[in-house]
Image (cartoon, rainbow, N blue to C red; front, side, top):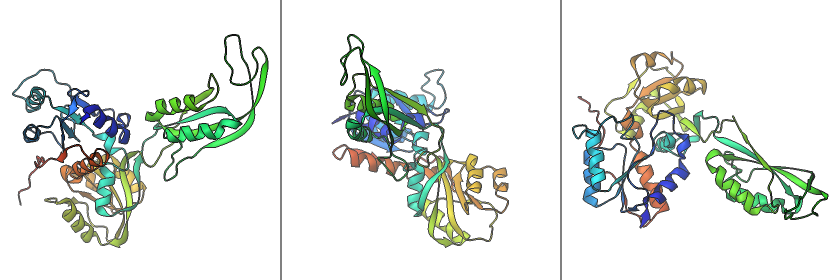
Length: 366
């Protein structure tokens, strides 16, 4: 048995809420996070069939990718499908949690799952986000520098790309004078003390700030810890929208479209004119990704595929790359598999099931 909050905290550690886009509504949409989670259904969308499924299993949590409340509700009207589903969930004490663009904006998330299905290598974010990391600078007596480093690393600081425990230190002299009422670790009250210190510098994600500072204060020997935190505008290739990677071997354009059709089981693929080139570098974005077409062009992608493209979007590549629309649902359908897998790995005794309902509202007449 786990509180719903345990499941939520785990998901938000992997895909922090601050990474969601401004227009989004990820997080706990409905329900009590303090209640015990009697199992969970995972789905791309909330539908009445999914709610029925949760009720039938006696589960108290539904985890969806697309938030059922995206715009403000002005009235509670049971004739409205969304309101009706929310009322049923409230009646049956079922919580609803949405993990949307924050899951889109981590490389292991929606787009990482798509890339894995395609067998892409050397994966990186297509459009990295800025403002996702901070720099911590602190001053530690040289005798305790390694202890403080280790504590801050354990709190999650110092990870850059495929490297962790990254830091910088410089040697110097620090001075301080303990005043009346102080309890100095070293030095005498009323006298200026000179200490050989190291300045330690670390980078860490914004959402880890509180635990990094807790680790710093717990490990640091001084009564009052001197530190400063600096916002960074650096772009890190693990956080942001879309993804780009390479196939093991070049593939003909028609063959790569056949691959997409087979993997994503799409009824139809709309695409721009063939370029006559083979496909090696592939950019992608689950869901609606028209805003990243120029990013894909700038990264020299041979193919960019996504969903929800408009008529005029297909003119944009102008023969420089192949552009394909495989469908919104089709591109994101494996998100439920991803969420089911990571939750089972973390909570092996917790009952979590991928929905058995097909929630794609789009049908194809062939």
